Length: 180
Image (cartoon, rainbow, N blue to C red; front, side, top):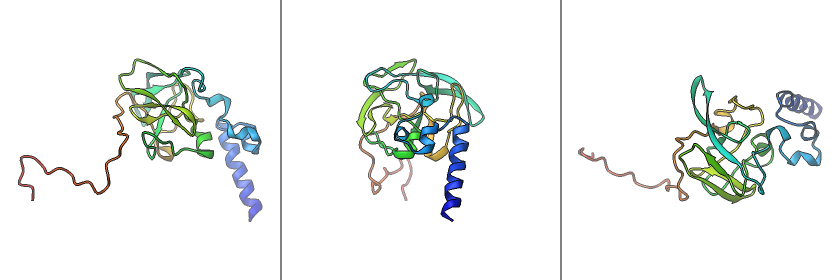
């Protein structure tokens, strides 16, 4: 049974590698596997500047403006993240490399670009959403929408509060109604 699981896992990694998602060293489990593949690296490392800009792409059958990095790769946010903490680690971070930069720049975006110091170093955030790329994407191609709770970042992405609303918060009473 164990041998069949290894073979199945190996076939899964081979399929991801075939579409450019994993390098041979990552599939083999070598020490280099902790680094994201070169083809999907963020726009810049912590010492450089990452550029976040907009472009149009087809997302779920509709053409819309999205955020991309300097290489034109679509940028995503991970729904479970908070404004101050990434929950993406290990194998998930290898498939969804974080966009990191100590000095990110924005071109043609109206939202707020910031840097959050976290386990990934200086991770870039847009309106409080930490940003990632997807190893299966290519410039102008969105393939990760909704996959593993990642969603394409758009220029209109709403600002995230650093302080989440408590689950037991009472919603305001409706205005203009009787309120029963």
